[in-house]
Every structure is written in C-alpha cells, then in structure tokens.
Length: 181
Image (cartoon, rainbow, N blue to C red; front, side):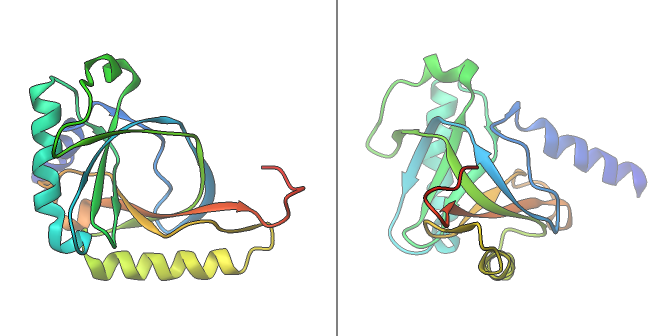
C-alpha cells in the first residue's frame, strides 16, 4: 500500500513542470503576492463545477498543439465558469495568441488572502474553505476583500481526492489607503 501511495504521489507531481507561485500550507490562511503572468483562459456559461470538463479540453488542446508545458496551479472562477492555465515564463514565446476557445490574458501582480486545503475539487470543499477564509479575512483590520473568491487547484485529475491540494483566494487591498504591504 505504501508503494502505491508513493507511485500515485510521483505521478501526480510529474504532470506539471513548473509552479507559478508556492502553494499555501494546508489549513493555513495567509496573505500573499501572486506574480504577474500570462494565463490561458477558457469560459462557459454557468457554474465552474458543472463546466470544468468542458473548460479543461480547450486549454489542454491549446497547450498541446503549441507544445507548451503544463504548469500549476490551475485557477477557477466559480460563478461565470472560467478556468485559467498559467504559462511558464520559459514557455511564453510559444503562446500564439487567442483562439475561438482560448483567450490569452496578461495579468498584473495580485495580492490575495489564501487558505490552503486538501481534498477533492468539489463545490462542497470549495464552499467550506471559502467560508473559513471569509471568516479569517473579516477578523483582520489591515485588509479588505477586493474581489470574488476563486479556486486554485494544484493536482491533476489522476491524483486521488485525499491527496489533492487546493486553495481559495480572495483578492485584497489595504483597509487604509496609507497602509503598504
């Protein structure tokens, strides 16, 4: 059993070559700065959890057809169903522009509240982690929410649910404009 666990962990980590930023520790809330970058975006009507398979396909076809290495994490806007793949800096020259299914998006550096979690990528787990992060953020006096919560997924589809890592992020800004990070 121990060998199977190790094999699954190795396979799940071998799927991606580079991380856009470090994951938050499981069960820990923190403030962190996300780097600027190039992301590939797929959109659909409805809720992410109803559309995730439909969103993944176009993004995977785009990176496969342009020989772009898979990176982690994958970001997901829940309402309005959007999925984002990060493009590693070393792979940026391979991005060939937007298509009918995939939009190339350049994003600036972002500041977020983040809660690390473990478990399957389900609406129930997202909601539970989101509610914990909202509570943590409401108790802080130095920052306030500046956008909607979204999901950040670290593992591929073949990783067993109990091994999967995810985060919930909420964009933030200083509560007082005079404060700095």
